[in-house]
Image (cartoon, rainbow, N blue to C red; front, top):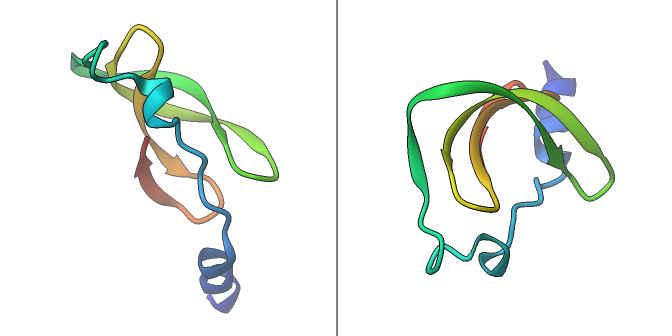
Length: 78
C-alpha cells in the first residue's frame, strides 16, 4: 500500500491540450449521445501511454476522454 501512495504523490501530471489548441471559442464541443470506447494516447512529461478510454465529446481537432490512469487506477478526464 505504501508503494501505491508514494506513486500517487510522486506521479507526473498529465499534459493536457492548451486553450489555444482546443480553441473552444471557435469550435464548441459536441457530446456523443453515448460514450464510445476508444484507444487514445495520453502524455506525461517523460512518456506517452496508449490507454483504453471512453470518448465523451469532440471538436474538429480534439476528443474529450475518460480513462483509468494506468499507474494509480484513478479515473481521469481530459
